[in-house]
Image (cartoon, rainbow, N blue to C red; front, top):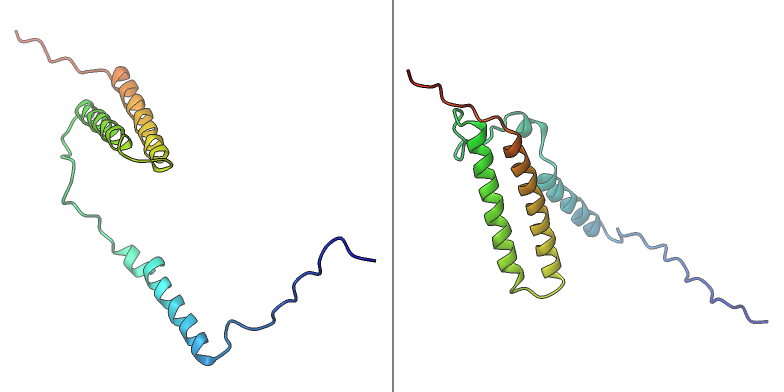
Length: 124
């Protein structure tokens, strides 16, 4: 009588370390990956963020929000322009990014609507 399914493939019991060189290669690859992907605690403890591009501490919240809103609007326009020149499926990705930008822009606009703008003191 025939079985309806074929026999499963035989398991290959060979080790990935068939030779001492392959084990050394694997260990070297692990060290390289750890070097680039796992920063050590000493590096993290003494990491100081760059102050090259720093927002002036005396900027008021409304100005910062207006700038953020304008930046998001420009980013939305740029992604829309790029999407016109890109084929699927990359176009869908760009349009998804544009949608995220537009949602962030809406949130910033709502905050701007809710912000109480301090009125200058009347001059006597």
